[in-house]
Structures are given as C-alpha cells and as structure tokens.
Length: 370
Image (cartoon, rainbow, N blue to C red; front, side):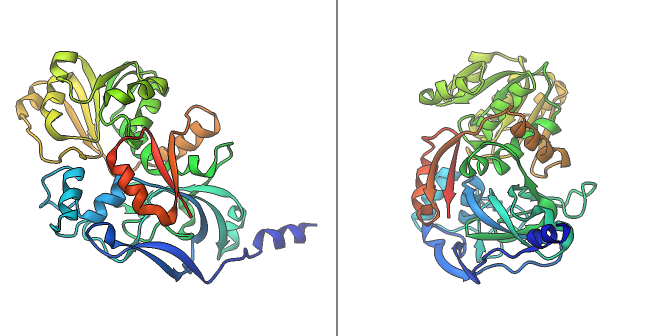
C-alpha cells in the first residue's frame, strides 16, 4: 500500500513538448504581443512545472511592454501608451533594469503542479496553487528580488516553471480565475499595509481604489479595522462601498477641501500625479505615505517642508516581505476576503483584454484563461 502511494505521487502528467504562449518581443505597442508555439519549459533542480489554469492582467505587463519604467518617461501609463501607438519609442526599462526580450509575461498565476525533479517536492504534485510572483531567492535578509514575468518567463502560456519555494497550495472554494486575481494585486497591497504598519487606529486614504491593488487595499485595510476612504470615479463609488469603503471621494475632487489638512494617518497610493502635493497636506503629523505605483504620473510636486515639519514617514514598496503571501493564504482559506473578478478573456484575446483594461471602466481584476 505504501509503495502504491509513492508511485502515484511520482507519476508523470501528460505534458506536451510544446505549448501555446503570448511572447512579448520588445518595447512597443500591441504588435509586440506575438502568439507562438514554443517549447514547454524544462525544469531544473528545486523547480516545479505548473500547468496554468488562469493568469491575471496587471499594469506591470503593460508598463514593461511600453517601457514606462524608463527614467526618460515623464507621463502616466495612459498617455505613454497613446504615444507608443503613435510611433514614439522609449528606452527599454523593466522593474529590475533592462528587460530581456523576448519574454513571456504574466505576473499572476493559478495553476496545478504537474512535474518536479526531486522526491521532496512530490507532495506538491496535483495541487492547485498560486505563485508568489515577487521572489526573494537570496533570502529575506536581502533586498534583492526576482519577479516572475519580468526576470524570467511568466504565466501567459500553458505552462510555467518556478522555484518550488514559490508555489503555495490553497484550499478554498474559489474558482481558478478568482484565485488568479490574488498574487500581484493583493500581494502588493498587503505588503504596503504591512510595511507602513497599518493598524485599527488609522484613517486610510486609498488612491486608484477601483483597480486591482486599490480594491484589494480596501478589503485588507478594513480587515485591520481601519476607517477607509477610497478615491474612485463616481460611477464606481457603489462598488467601493460594497467591498468596505467607509467614504468615497470622486476622482477629480479637491482633496484639501473635502478632507482638510492633517486628518489622514496613512495614504496608500498607486497613482501619484497632480494630487501628490495634497497628500502631504492632508496627512496628520506623524502620519505615513506608502507608494507602489504612479500610473497617473511619476513626476510630482514635492514640498520637503511638508515632509520634515510634520514628521511624515514615506515608504516605497516593490519587494515583498515573507509574511505577505502567508497572510493572503490565511485570509482566503478563512473566508476573510473575497475575490474581485471583473471579467475573463481567452489568452489568445490578450490584445482585446489589455485594450479594455486600459479604459479603466472596470472594478477589480481581468483574468486570461489559456
């Protein structure tokens, strides 16, 4: 009986030698997204092969493709994408420097582990998992990070290979597409709240609150017992309220008039842009500002007097802490958060999906199905 179990856990799944993938061939417009048949990844020691069941869409895939991370870019992602479509090009830059194209993107993944090389990972075979896309392969005492779909091929394919340490089995009733909304958006959000010491005494202002990270932050801040204020477009205000926002402010409001000075403990920002200087005015003395994005515009007006005279702490967040993914798995399995799946598309329809994503008419996340 014991031998039969070992044989079952070590069996090979029916893995094809080639697979369908969306390959990003360089910086540019939608013409850089190529539908290809490529070799299925061959795993190495300490790696597992995951059959992709669903892959989320994030700003980062679009930003990397259009070269937004280049320091020469001084506009928001929407403006830059329009410029790219009009033929303007920018120097290649990714999250960790120059991106090595061609690259299979796809930062978010829900899948099934179908192959491993070492018996110590046999218990993962056949398990449905989500992948921690920000990896600290040199250990959590180092700030060095590796991002799936930026530093190596990601989940916009039928299979992806990753270090075995970065797959997390999960036991819940969520669909594959719902689980694919979690890694990047919720991981980024949980990391910002963790690093900025968000707690139940905080009044938290969330920018871009209808997007993946913003909508996740509403839930995760409410889970901590915070008073949550969300900035969204007027047509999405009811959605923000439904997932936990105590107050909603329309996107183009004058924040100083609506909130007044010195009334916010923590600003969680993924937008940047024209409101940045107001953020520092509305933060209370001793308050905090945390950022993991600047889709509105990365170039902002910054009065240093607001920073030092009010003892404001500022945090930049891209490198996830070890506790982040452990917390998310716990929240999901205990039913403490809910998925915010806006729409699914076939992987082959990625251009349609990214075009609709950039319109920002949705609330929550888009997901691709291979």
